Image (cartoon, rainbow over all chains, first blue to last red; front, side, top):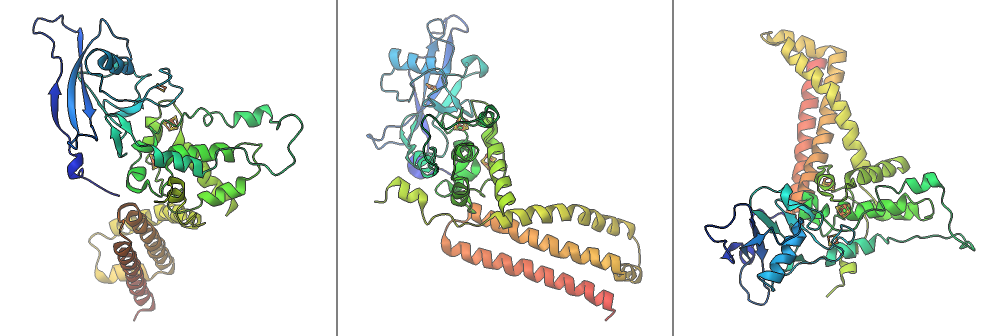
Length: 261
Length: 124
Ligand code: SF4
Ligand code: SF4
Ligand code: FES
C-alpha cells in the first residue's frame, strides 16, 4: 500500500543519549551511532537512541559496533546476526541510508554519525528485527528446489560445466532481502509482487539445466503483479551487498516470457 | 487466519501480462520515430497559414504517420496509466473506476484525433 507518512503508532520520536563522551575525550576515539529502537511490550512509539562506541576497543565493522553497544552499554538492544561474514543474511538492515549487511560494512565507509534502521517498509518485531514471514513465504511459493520427472539416476543429476556456469550470479544469493526492501514496487505491492530476491531465486531454478519444470515455473510467475510490477528501477541491484544483479534476473525472466509467448 | 503461504499464493497467477508488456515495448519503439516526425512537422510549420498546415496534413504519407502516432500513443498511454493505477491504487472499487476512466479517456482522445485527421484528408 502506498503510504507517504508513517501510521501514528510508527512515528519515530527522539530517544535518549546513553553515553555521551566527556568533553576532553580523545578526538576521533568515540563514534556516534543513532539506532532505531522499538519495544512492542511498552506500547510506546519507536525512538532513535544515541550511543557512542569506543573505537579503540571495537572491531571495524558496523556489526562489531552493535555487538559492542549490546555488551557494554545496553543489553536490551535487539538485532539478528549469525555468521558475521556475509554468508547467512541475518544482519541485513538500513545503515547510513542504504540496505546492507552490518557485518560486511566498514564503519569507516560512513561519514559522521551512523544511523541504523530496520529494513524499510517491513513490520518491525523489535528494534532492528523485521518480520520476514511474508518474504520467506514468497520464497517457499516459488518452490526453490530441484523438480524432475525423469527417473532419478543411480548416482547424481549430471550438469555440464557450461550449464553450471549459468547459475553464477544467482546461486550466491543469501536471501538477506536488502534488494526487495529497497524496491518501491515491493513497498507498495509486497503482498502480490514477489520482489527481486524471490524472482532471482525463481530464475535460479528456471536456469538450472537439471530442473524439468521450467514451463510450469514460468506459468506461476506470469502475472501482472507477481512479475510485472518490476519497472526496472534498479534499486535492487544497487542495494545487493553480494554484488548480484536481481534486475538482470528479472529481465531474463521477462525475455523468456516473451520468447514462449 | 490464513497461513502465510496461502496468503502469498492468493488467487494464483493470472497467466497474463506478457502481451501487455510486449505491446508497451513495441509502441514505445514505434513512438520514437513518430514523435520525432511530429516535432519536425510542427517546427517546419512555425508561422505557416492554416491552409498550408491543412494541405500538409492531407498528404497521404503525413496522414498515415499521424494516424500511426495517434494509435500507438493511445495504446501506450492506456497501458502506462493502468500500470500507475496498479502500482498506487489499492482499493478494488477505486481501481475499477480509475481503469474504466483511463480506458474511456484514451479511447476518446484516439477517436477524436483520428476523426480530425480523416476530416482533413477527406476534405469535409
Ligand atoms: S528493477 Fe524491479 S525489482 Fe529491482 S528495484 Fe526496480 S522494480 Fe524493484
Ligand atoms: S539478491 Fe542480493 S540483496 Fe537480494 S536477497 Fe539475494 S543477496 Fe540479498
Ligand atoms: S551476520 Fe551473517 S550476513 Fe551478517
